[in-house]
Length: 622
Image 1 (cartoon, helix red, strand yellow):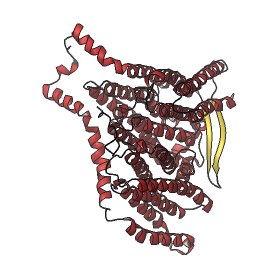
Image 2 (cartoon, one colour; image 1 turned 60 degrees about the horizontal axis):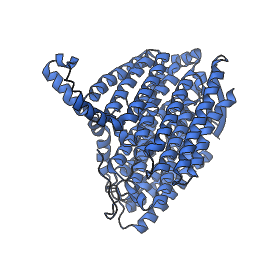
Image 3 (tube, helix red, strand yellow; image 1 turned 90 degrees about the horizontal axis):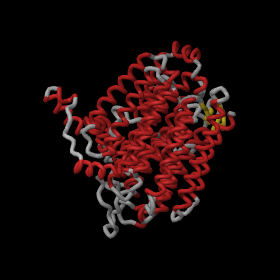
Image 4 (spheres, helix red, strand yellow; image 1 turned 120 degrees about the horizontal axis):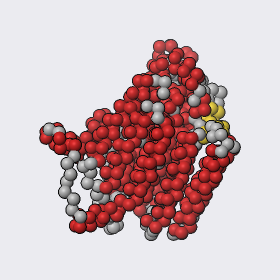
């Protein structure tokens, strides 16, 4: 029975690759490939589900592929199936099937028809990898695929300003969740001294014994899991990204932000429940977070003028309640609540284009006076204050901007004196000195040796801070990101057991992707007079193939799943010791900012309204 699990991952992967080969003008074939792929997947799963239910409902685990292995490290793809996977796959397959049928007609003659179905099948592949994951590494593969497909679908109308801008905002929040998950994986490596599977994680005695002797690291893993889950499921303080994600097509909003993708944070909590369930303080924190989010999101939802925004905040409020149910240990209730919320929000979003006309007609023929609500019993000052706060969405965007993004931009702008000639003149000699120190590190004093990893990681963070705030030269921003990875490798090289083979493996992905991206930028620069990062240029309109190649380079540099960079990021964190918190903070911060900087370069150069005025401009988004 275990071997059947790989079929459910293979079907969407095969459908995705087949859809890539179909010309964009063949709408009927494209839609039928997606329709047949998801339909075959759903029917085969229903047959398997009946068989599984009638044969004892045992948990299944399949160790599939070893992607990378060295002396002290293994990156293993592992599949796992239990009732959580069953519920998520039942809901996911059925809703994706419905949305695929809906999209065939909704997006008829749309310019990006092929892009949409390619991305939906790519998303469905990532979704299946996530819910079938048997360990953190496999889950992270699907997790990253969900984030990338989310960015592409929000920016589906890539000739408009607001969808592209909001896609970057959402991707920025996702990167925080990504690093939260990476840090949880890093700490779990040190706690278990292996790539722990979820099957082993359900062993109460094993988990209890480890937590008794490693209380702090256990709490750290739980908090990082909570950060990742909160970012993915739009809980406080990350709630403001979900309404911004509604800029994509209505079908993608329904399948992503109403039903499936937005509940992946809940899935992460359910999957890791046996681990943090034994930590009462973490359970209380999850419950408080869910309750606070539910109250604030409900208040915001009631004053929204947009149908999609109202549905988004209502969904956030329900997910907050699901967080409370998971924290209280009501697993079955949380699964039932997830299924109900997913079906309801999908329906609401799919009918949202028509709801405005329905409401206008209702106002003409059936006037209903405003009814008395509980807020009317509050003192007027409190009522009005809450109303204004809700109108401003409790300033969630401003809080994130002032506490996180604005300080980073201001710090980066203080590095404006760094130009490419200065960078090459200053940092290449420093890097050569660092390499010399690495090859002769045995002769270095012990005190100096201990300070070198955080020092080199700090220089790498300076590189990426400058790239993050760069507004003039995209080539310079691209080089700074590449240099950050080289400084990171040099930093980790001073830790034990980081072999030259592992260094070469990680840098191979960086060098290939970095070179490819540089060639694309230089080729575009030779054809266009001005390329900067001050605005959106929309060059994908005239250079669609160049934009696609550059996107592939960006994904390779950010750590697209199964690439050397992706595995290398996990490999690097596995070589950071459990007492090196400064080092892990510097490197994780660099990974967050480098990913955002890369996608910002792609969006500002190739997406948005075309800079040339002789092209037709779209209407502004609402």
